[in-house]
Image 1 (tube, one colour):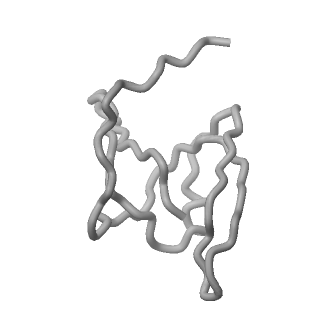
Image 2 (cartoon, one colour; image 1 turned 90 degrees about the horizontal axis):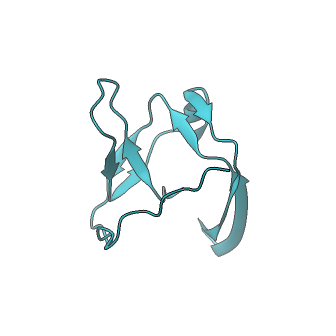
Image 3 (tube, one colour; image 1 turned 45 degrees about the horizontal axis):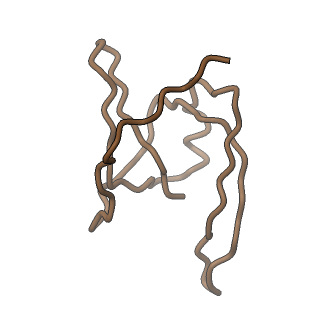
Length: 93
């Protein structure tokens, strides 16, 4: 699983900090027990799951989640670049 957008959230009031160039590690099932909140709008992900026999096309639908703790590690070489523009403002519905 490759995270698309990762933020470090501080409980002392500091602004959230975007974290780039990380991979999730550890047992994904353990992460389910650490979910604190979920969004109410599902998003769709389509990608390729690596397997020994080759890549398999996959799709998943899930809301955004907030976890209390998750294991990450720095990628060996990150191709990520900072965004050129700020994220668009979400419209209130």
